Image 1: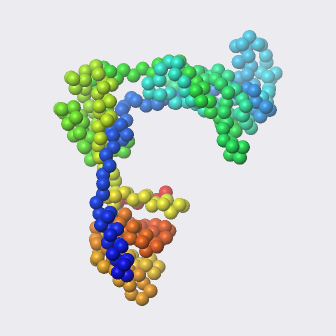
Image 2 (image 1 turned 90 degrees about the vertical axis):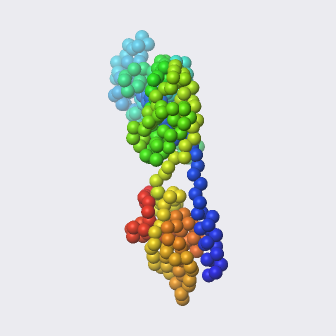
Length: 335
């Protein structure tokens, strides 16, 4: 057991100091107003090899309406075809999309078509939530994937849509900007404010809450909002994280935050006896005992248990038991 004791001590010493990694504000926050917008449209895919909608009434009416616009007068009942399918077309409009820029689109069957493979989407207007048309889509549908895993009622058209209207965002002359943290945290928000003010040389940033930071445009950056945001996004912050352990019982995966601590506790699990409180190892008969210093991190405890050959299933059970006993100081999330 002396060899095990030395190994455990080495592991604890190596993990005793946690290293905080800095991240750019660009990667842990977003600027209010800078986001994608969802677009949607109803269209028709033609040229299918008998795999389209059967006698779907809305498909027949759509084909009749399309032909009517092209100058062909037909009754809806006369245009039933298995080579045509009604589809829903979706796309994401970038924050600063400009007229003429292409968009990737997704085409999904709306009726009872068995496959969209080999079809061509006809000209389809794409609307935002305000009902305004921002793009127009058209082109051959690509199913992709191997024959074994093809999902043939959904396809993609790379660069299948063209933006028709600019997304207007005047950031150059703004007097104030708002940052939203992806993971709201009071410590991270306070650190961000201090660092931003230090970078700008004045009290320009303030935290409204744990996830919102307001920034007043300095006089030096008046009408230069783009340059201001570029400098702010490049600022590096050490984001604070919650003390958290995430367990995936299906895969046996355990992810541990470096701030999770374990206080004095003793657990008997099968032939294994785990004690956190004293710094010594012993072995009495068939029972194996592991003792560690009180206040160690969960990462240190897990490393030591792994050295003893504890299975992932047993490890998860031990962590759950420690949490239930109130000795694991952090959030325990089970997927």
